[in-house]
Image (cartoon, rainbow, N blue to C red; front, side, top):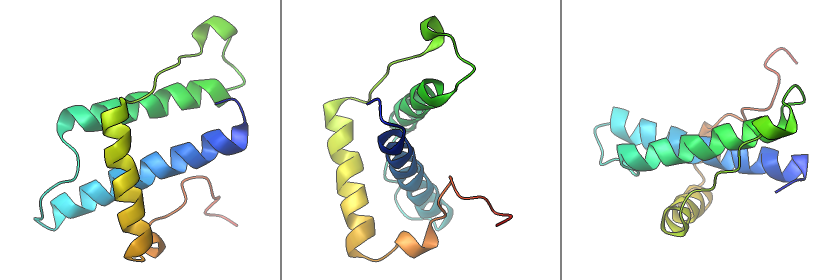
Length: 99
């Protein structure tokens, strides 16, 4: 993934599924991802952020992707969010709140 638009979309998707999982836990419902899965998702988020950080030298850029099994679970969650119209509850982490 090299295109900044793709990276931003991936970051937004990963943020959305983690946020949804956290909201499920707060409401006392069964959580979507285990602690280990959340760690893996955050590892990929960190990797993506290192790829778009202009201050990083090439050797500092990390390349990490979640497992294919976890990707299936992320995609199912994204589909559920889209089908149940829960997207409006999620904030885009890339918008400026001051605008």
